[in-house]
Length: 358
Image (cartoon, rainbow, N blue to C red):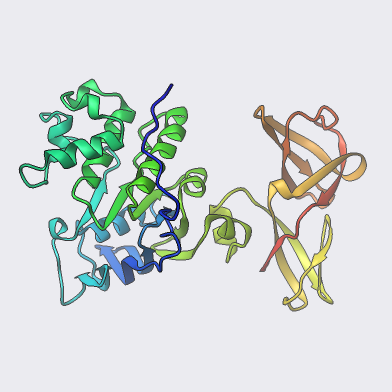
């Protein structure tokens, strides 16, 4: 039987503090950072609650890694301030170096010392004589039997867990993870992210996890922060951000989405697939966001036609061409032989869509 990654915690010791009031572990206020003429962060605002695992999601080049490096103290911001707890660690008037911030870092390439064994890597940066803490975190990540192995003798997943153990060993206030699974294949990445989440929860660690992978961000975070062009667009619980994106830009970054043209008249938005409620919107043009899983297709006479399908086993993604020439991606469970390419279909929405100003 496979050994559990970490022991279970007693009731009332969950990530959210068992009903205890959460405090802020890390805050960035109006942070700016440029590299020459390139603006990396512009008015970057993000606060992390103690004990929370926050996924920082954004496309490549949006400033995610720069934000993480500013939090860690590897880059000095041009403006704004960074606080760890109630202590200002970066501002125009204050600067605390990385080693004094109580911030742990797991790098994208893990950055293990090749000349040190597993124990030496984890002990690096700890006061001498902290052998008990080293064994404690190695047991936490299930690598206590590999303490004398060298990094090159470990698998990619094991190296990643050594890097996590090293970051956790000094009991940091915050752990920062910079796309730590990007060097792993897809199947290992899915398993390792679940294990890392379990370790962070068991350690009651506060963590910021940077990724450009939407699935990863939704799966691992207690809180989701969506970032684009150097600033935060929206924060919240992953399911809330997914269901109620604040803008079209957020909807495009979080999950799959269709965007249909609509016209609001008398409190209803009229689209090619029918009319939907539009309370709070003035008459005029709108953009209607429809998630693929909120569409039902019925074979038979209808205004749509199946033009493509991708089968994944557990579900499939079907594309229907609508009568106005636009297309609609629909996610369906399992095989649907009645929806062959070329088939005519009726389109029905199964949940209220989100409306944005055109």
